[in-house]
Length: 265
Image 1 (spheres, helix red, strand yellow):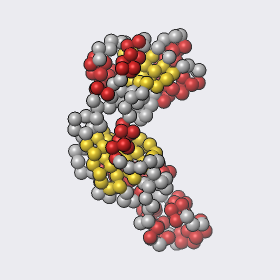
Image 2 (cartoon, one colour; image 1 turned 135 degrees about the horizontal axis):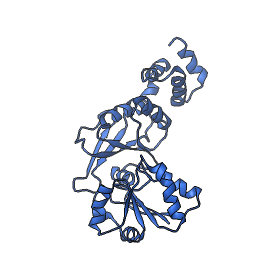
Image 3 (cartoon, helix red, strand yellow; image 1 turned 45 degrees about the vertical axis):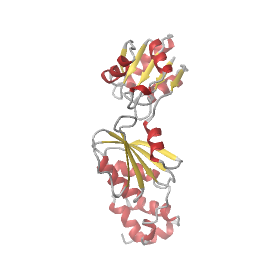
Image 4 (cartoon, one colour; image 1 turned 90 degrees about the vertical axis):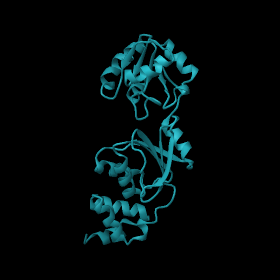
């Protein structure tokens, strides 16, 4: 059996009894970083063989893990914090288990995106996007897919990217209410309410969960002329063809109306 075990994202006391029981009975534990995991495992006196399983080796090691599972071994997968498979290794192994008809289950635990969403006080529905790509052009391309979704958009953000991500989000989504959450369940847990235009001016150490309230209609762009609306997207680096498509979606008008305005741009 493969066990995907949720681990504490802050306070070590968040670990439940069933998770401890499972980790004590498996043959070995897959860890994203064995040094990080040892802090938790030593705290609960869990003494099991540890194997490294991270984004750089998960493809090549999954085959051997599946063989062990087929041969009757019990294996647990944990991440550094939170639920495996959510912006952490695990998805590839789960799909290999499905493909090979290997039994697997989830042992519930804390999940940063759920905790942060509840702390924000925003209303569902929500869409989890995770970390944005590093390249600005790829960020914009991805965000355009979610721009017109009415609901909250949830992102994981590293300390190195928080300023840049706020800027790109504002360019694509407009000025929307946002909540930045860090140090979840730790002593210095922080919730900062802001907007995409104001950005985040707090301590940038650590990793963040950013919730953007995209429930409100975006009236700013629709108040522009069609030509100005097109120029907005062209200035962001999109092609004329994409700009036409986005303006049609924003304004809910026919392509022919927008195309006429685009001819001289």
